[in-house]
Length: 518
Image 1 (cartoon, one colour):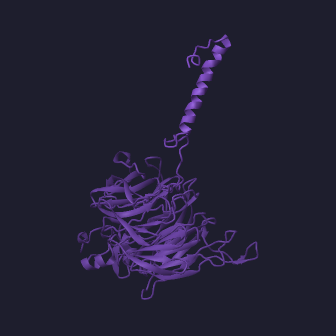
Image 2 (cartoon, one colour; image 1 turned 45 degrees about the vertical axis):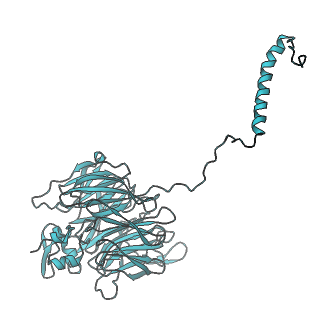
Image 3 (spheres, helix red, strand yellow; image 1 turned 180 degrees about the horizontal axis):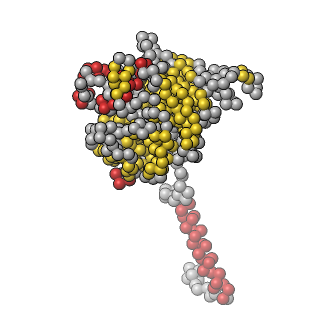
């Protein structure tokens, strides 16, 4: 054994250089063999296994504006779609009465009780320090703000002033006054695709800030289209505004008491709801005129005609339809209209042929009875169902748009005035707000059940979603201030119970005990 372990001299310098490397390789080999041969030892992970779950849902929010009282600080609440949780909340300005949101769903503007305008970033990081303020015209001695609507276009913010009959154009961030565009008397709403080169200001042509005669009664001009819209008798006007020059290029006659308008995403048609004569005026925005023409034949030999006006009808038992709100669904090319006075929803085919003419089915209408006083309607992005906010009976009707039937009716908290939706995964969500309630009802559309309610600070005055499907642009760009034909914050039954008249001031009241009586 002693001979086996005897010292072996190194014969050359080259051998001395090779041996250390050889010994190192041998050591590594022994180590590997030792590890490989020991089955009970934990093997180290060389490449971690990455999970292969579904991709994260696109970001979508509902933005709710609420106020504890007409003079208190308003609160903006960002509700996250994915978890129905409040992502952010912040004071946004004194006594907000209405708001609008831009096409990107990233900025909202509120109209405040002191005449100011709040610029609000809509995201999960909303804080009070991020809210900025813009100054509009000084409030008159009456205290009634003459600005009655806000519209968030791609080129800026538009404020509609009924005292000067002008559209104020504001640009920049925060929004700053740039110029005014004179329009027809009493502009109450605005419409247009955010990126379009032409917008339309919608005027009622009756005084807003002074009393006016409606039938045998004298009422607030700003409430005439609420008190008795069919007796107003004055037709409205649409003024085409060129965004390149801020000039009026057309004056288009509408129906009686135009209260709301919506445009097709391709910018080819604009639909104006006339509460006073139960019609929808159709504007061909390419021709900048009513959708009138001489019937003809298109390039494929198919006949076509044009429809300058479309009728809407009430449910059985009602005299007037009274359309007040609508959504255009791009998937089905349908206009879905809520008829407040007629307790019905109208589903209207407004499809075009490949050459931009009215299709052969354009104007085909289905009338669906719903709950009492549907103040708003929303349609899922896929066009499968519509949801109405039935103000007087505190419910939401869920409509199968294909079969034109009500599938179910859900009770909600308060008297709902606004319903909006987003559909950014296998199912969508519908948000319902009532001006006399601090709860936002969230409906899951996979089961059409109330998923949860979200408590906000003070009664909610309005809500918007940032996108209909988390990828497309928001098309709900205009505010909905009560009055001028838009439903008041409280239902008609509250006015009747209190013996209170419908006035511009009473229309904005959220607590029935605060209604002013003669």
